[in-house]
Amino acid sequence: MPYISMFFGIIIRMFYNEHNPPHFHAEYQGQRGIFDFNGNLIDGKIRSKTARKIIKKWALIHKKELESNWNNINNGEELIRIAPLD
Image 1 (spheres, rainbow, N blue to C red):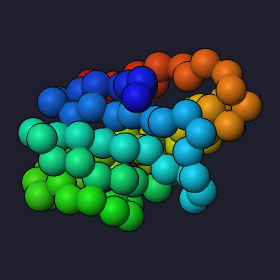
Image 2 (cartoon, rainbow, N blue to C red):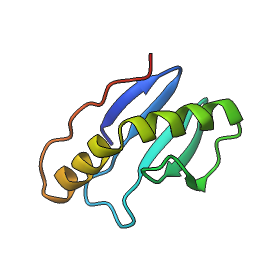
Image 3 (cartoon, rainbow, N blue to C red):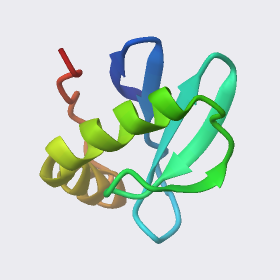
Image 4 (spheres, rainbow, N blue to C red):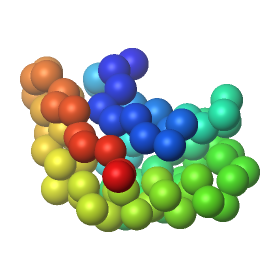
């Protein structure tokens, strides 16, 4: 599964041939979660409140890029890396 961004020990990924609703996968310290493009945890478990807040902030900043990548994977096109948080 290709990663699209990495920051503060968080890895953000998207799968090809993924199911709806649109989402991305995040991993932090061995914990995994699935998030919508508003940064809300919809499945899995990332225990760190700080990590969840950082993921949410990143998702809201990059929502259009996430949507674009979602379209890319559904069209069999290449994923584009998204800038990390600074």
